[in-house]
Image (tube, rainbow, N blue to C red; front, side, top):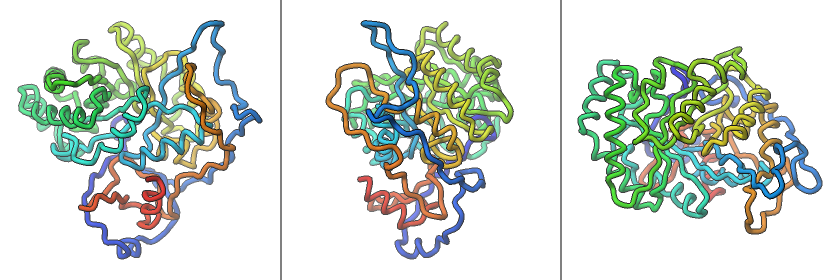
Length: 417
């Protein structure tokens, strides 16, 4: 997300105290993650026809004998095993639509976590291996202490150390970890939103060192036998702190050119988002000029509230430009399934994607649930869906959101296993 607007991740480690923790958490009105705004009640979404298909159009039909490709779609639902479980629930809410893309993030607090700490990626690797047509997308920080507000001078020094090869070993270990989990074709969104100011891995303090460091990381990871990684260069939409084109490290080390694109700033139209300098049109033109596919690792609502027109136009943009993949950021205020404050945009998202499957022979589809009967992800009265990094872990491997009611979180964890 753009500068000054990203939810800061908090990678906390604590020992869960069982009932004592539950008693210490006092229920209260639910709030959207990172906003302080109370949730709106979920309103009804469009229903399906008797045949199970959406009553809304799914786009123009293919010509006779032509197979129309569909964008690979997914959503960020949670960083850990809960995110894997929620993929199936989201698919059911979408009438059995294919969700080919799973998306998670490595914590950027310590090098040991950037290396892919044991057990952190296991559930996502299992999900990826279940089907050959799935894509695992992993955001990878380029520096530890990635959200600690380091000064430009500190960042500049770290980038130069990275460019000199000082941190190569951490990325070789990450490559070995992914290959060991049998996910050697993972898409790596390395140093995302580098054109902003939020992250330590930002480009602005020294673009030349940043590009050299990117190339060192890619070289280190590609040196590990068995890898088939794809590296995704993903700025935020617009100019932000520096033009993202000044950070582009070169065609040899970039496989995909992505963009994180949220509905912001306030009052901006979708047409402006397309036409602005370094905006959506510039992104697809730049990728075409460099012979690269595009992607949208993060996208969603933001400064303009429940905006169904934005949702409609963005989905149409994907259909037109056929990104390699897109993943909606599905927590408040950005999302539509786990966030109840955007019912109009949710209706558009659901009606557009309802029942979408790949236009190729496939096994018999699962029975389609009646819309409106699929259980929604449970949340306690006093918490909201988990954002990236709101997690704790103790020695038994249980994962509990410290912002949630203990019993609600544990019930959901057990239910979705």
